[in-house]
Length: 418
Ligand SMILES: Nc1nc2c(ncn2[C@@H]2O[C@H](COP(=O)(O)OP(=O)(O)OP(=O)(O)O)[C@@H](O)[C@H]2O)c(=O)[nH]1
Ligand SMILES: [Mg+2]
Image (cartoon, rainbow, N blue to C red; front, side, top):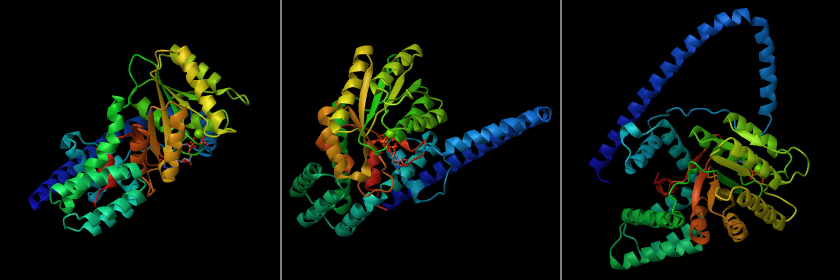
């Protein structure tokens, strides 16, 4: 990028910022106006019902005291426009590079990209910063490729993906002189190719529920990786995108799982089908949930499953049983078995993916906890070695901290140079 380019980019980002700021101000004023009108109406009503209202308030307080004690989302806060800083300009540029115009970008998107970039900061620190230091502005040499190889392995990118990238770079180097900046650009393209391959192979670029059918998404994975939290975020994403959504609480092993799900369900207005009795059969919960989904014309049924049972075989048997019930009751349902993986577990996550892929008929992966881990590179290993399309990524515990996976944004965030 030469000076003029960066001046133009900054000017573009600054216009986008001014527009978003204006829009936010207008929205705030509109909300305030509505709020004032509402308060005026309420005032008259309140005078009449003073006593009754005190009674109700007591009840609300008790309810929120109960829900606040459960693991679940805090409140759904709409993201606010932050400063016009490096985070903003980088996010705006990433959106612009994907063909968005100033009018098309939103605060939500800027907020997410900022989170993603921050989340991948640790991965980047041990990798890109070192790489850029080593490369400087000089052309790539066979020695710098050796350094890059070590860095990629250290970032948990995995041996197969690393080999692939390094041999492509070596080939390019034999043909022409590759400068530092061109090297990074080529590296980004290669990493993106690796992540995109299983997505292309699946024939589905973006996973969304198919209209007119029952879509059933099973969330599977070992304990503690973030299945229930991810399911809660998906329920919010789905219902706020106007898909009729239902949750099946099929983790009957963990006592608090149902309560945890109910909190998430309530916040996004999605019902939870559960069976509170001890040792309830998970497949029976799914059976009930399918009946309910059919009656209510549900688009998406999200199924939470157990991460820990007495043995790994039990876990796989149970998943098979759930799958059998779905196939039998709704043969034309679109079923997705999504493996939830905790990015911070690095190579261990890769092992889990390999073992689940063998026995659980997986169709995709969701990477969670990308915030604050240095091992985000594992996403590449999952794509290359397990051939699983990554469908969503989570970078935080809040309701809006999950987004459909976008390989361009992911690679840009992983290799952002500041
Ligand atoms: N920082 C961070 N924490 C997360 C994320 N996703 C989940 N968590 C946290 O990880 C912990 C475990 O999450 P759960 O959703 O209960 O995990 P699970 O896979 O359902 O666990 P089991 O039901 O016990 O198998 C909770 O404290 C979550 O808040 C994320 O993207 N970022
Ligand atoms: Mg759970």
